[in-house]
Length: 399
Figure 1: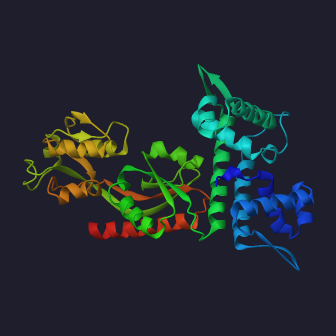
Figure 2: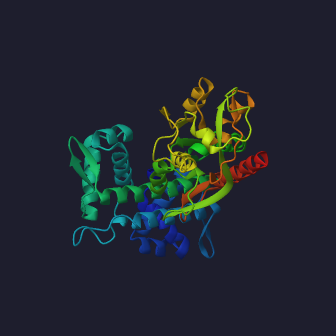
Figure 3: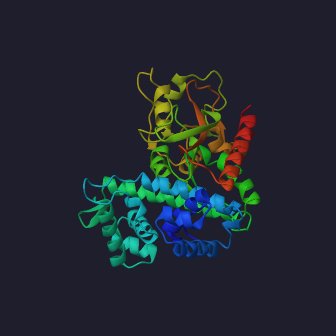
């Protein structure tokens, strides 16, 4: 069951039914006839297999499912209302109220695929249908949503704003469906942005327990850096990010710290520095390194270590892949700078060792980043709780 399988006008009217407690008054407020609203409500209930409202002496009373879906629908339409501003005197005063589910779905597929052909393939609609939906939305909003660039199409700023609004609305409707279905055995879907420092232990440990507790929920893990994941988080493509968070969250983002993590120097077992004591920065400066590319936070920490040296150490290999770095260390005398979690298995197996030197100024806070105002579903809240428990285990291991 997909968010845009539902009629948007009927979904919007759920809030009116809840507020007015009467189909007649709700239909009037929603701009629908009473029979049309009655049929629309019945169709949504059939699609869900759940009663959303009960007739009582005091009027229409929402069930738990009706309350959940109507609240989420309200949040969805608030996202749509925050879409692009209409173009001057063109377009309609409330374009978000005129968009259909078919148009919203078609435009989102077009935006995600970057063109009419890809949008048609992803959605199962024809290219003319995708093209028509985009043009209809441009007329409703009175602004250009896409423009031709070379042989392809790109979204205009207004198009990107609308795509984000639709995507966030879809997330809310999907959450409403999940909450309305409750414990019927139909699971939802969670998309996690996994930054490097979450991938080795924290996220796998939390997910292993989550799968045991919520086997019906599907989890998608998207790997990337903060820079690669922050816009998908804002867009609603992912629900939360886990990894090294920023000292101050950027606008529209909230952060939940979990634990502090410090960096260490690692090398192969038997490396010449492994058995030494009283190692200083000057000793490290004489070694060759494999570190992340310039511009990454890890590379910045590495550069800061050698700021007072006459010349930085040699870096014959620049690499952001921890998997490649681990394999390279095992077969060379190169050093690297990583979190202990990232090579915990290799250290436990005796393949790699930590070089005995403390590195001041390399502490980073690991945590969760979400959109401001985001309201997690029960499954998402459960996963966050498990991430918190897994982080407690990590802290105990560090101490």
